[in-house]
Amino acid sequence: MQVNSLSPGSADALLFDLGRVVLDIDFSKAIACWAGHAGCPPEAIVARYVRDEAYRLHEVGKISDEDYFASLRSSLGIGISDAQFLEGWNAIFAGEMPDIAELLPRAAKQLPLYAFSNTNRPHVDYFSKEYAGLLDHFREVYLSSSIGLRKPDAEAFDHVVAAMGVPASRIVFFDDLAENIEGARACGLTAVHVTSATDVGNALRALGI
Image (cartoon, rainbow, N blue to C red; front, side):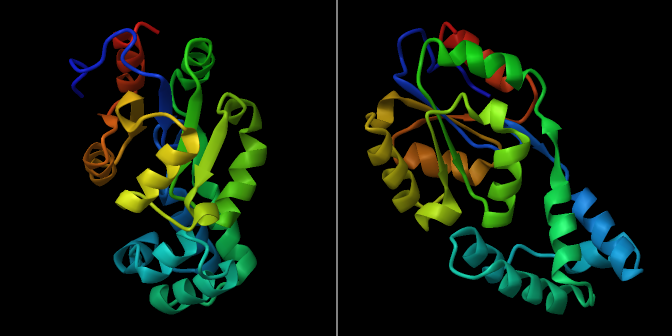
């Protein structure tokens, strides 16, 4: 991560991805759950699972949970119920990222915090309750399933920047995926690629937080 473009006073707002930036994600837990219900080895599901068009449509709220699970039932070749799919789907949340519970309230004392996540309705329902205290530090959480737009599309970043009411150049954005970092930078945001547990803290220190 490069923090040389960050300095005290160089930002008016901070924008955080949620998965693997604020909330730890372990997708192997979903695979293990589904395999257990289906009575097959996890490797068989891993080999077939892809983030396909149905996945993307689910993230922008264009298809129902039932339709997405039906597509998984077909693509994975397992005959488990919607309830069993949902159990595994929500099992991926593995707690908070290291130090984030200390970093967010500290940052919120100096700058407004926002979040922008590619996610879906079942995950929103789950993490909004399980991590309500942590998410309270954000003034607003922008969700792909609610706004109908997803990262790294320019339209998605432009929508969020406009909603925040802060110039793109004065927003520092944190995300774990390179394509989202590139998309944010193309839209004028300063972006920090989060690849380790220390990256957020280092960036905040560079900002004087």
